[in-house]
View 1: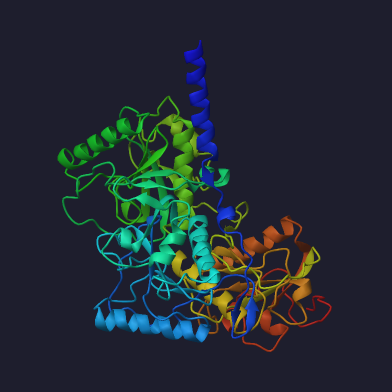
View 2: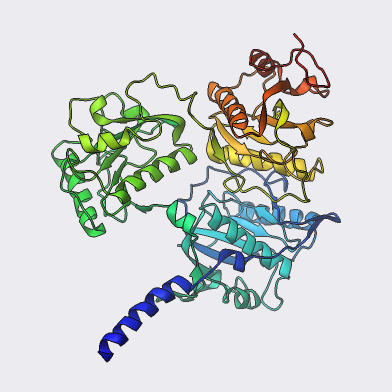
Length: 581
């Protein structure tokens, strides 16, 4: 009996320890510091873009990082420190010049640099491989603190900017929660990041205390929502895939179709079983069907994991006539009579959502079963009946989601927005005006580039126009994604004299001569309809072009001509917002 109690206590301790033996992300970074730029306080940590520090363009195309990264490497630049924006810009430019001209690198080596002014200077950024630590760059994010910290510790404002950057990387999915934190001198022969700096980071979560064994400090806790919104990806390397027998064709993004099929094999319930099954399927496809690789883009195991086939970027051979414009997702098993398990279904939904979020799938993609295109039983009747209930399922090619579709939002968290620099005024809802503008920038149709563009607009509005936040309530890109600016509840700063009684929607681009995309226009209409449904907009709202209320070219002739045909458009300016026809 005593042995049983000890065993039970051991199990309970293990379970309990697993739940508490982690560090809450907000406990790691919970610091309301005030950074100053040229004497003006900014109550949150800010990024300084490559444009803002006047970076040289890279000498050659840089290699993409595979995200999320699993390693963070902390270094120092071994230069003089800096404490003001002007000093840090000069120092960062000097470092880039040295790296390109003296070291022969294609660009500055670091992903990010942290100034003694408490600002984050974007080097290669989140998405490109750095060249700081030979042999370890491919799955790493390198952070260089400007200065030399062998005998002097970095100031608190600089340390907290590093913590902020790590927190944002975790929150936005750029950094894996099981990442390993290293000082650069743990991996290569160097004094970097200096004795004083490594003494500080040794106390942080995820720091590797023994490089040989991989032992590390307590790690960060995932929130329940983060656990629920993620899936486990088993890469080709992890399931020991054969390399393709020849070069595979590239997919053009975003793709229009998601095609669901079944492998018509035995199911698998554990990772080892699923790896065995996926390897057998690849061998069958390559050796018996003479394909260059496994035919599917992804496979979903009964263990709830997603197995990378050809991935997001390569054309599959799963559905003749549609391979060039689709992502093929195969459920491992035979589902004519038996349904896939809950984990398998959820993993497929999360995979599709990630495809939209990354810009690999069109926001108005069409979901179909394989048997709708070919004489096959796949994906099986039981599975087909399930996916018929999913969003975007379509029995034919003439699907119209305009009546029941909701906008595809990119939240402030997802585009990594700065916090407002001051308290913002609330709107009195519902508001009665919608004001359409253009951003007077270039357009964008790739998610990463659009996020960068929205961030640069926010930086411009805060740093150059002295607004407390991005001016618009919402912004809309060429693919129809809606970026949350100030949102439904906060007054904008887009149209002086009218901000407290309106929602400002800016279409990303310049539409004096160019025309917005159909996705962009449809998303704008959906957003307005959503505002009415949510009670944020009055049902009898009035619609203006920006230039009807203030002296500006916005929203450009072509966009203005388009919205002048929409319901509730005001043909003549009237301060009371009454429609005059």
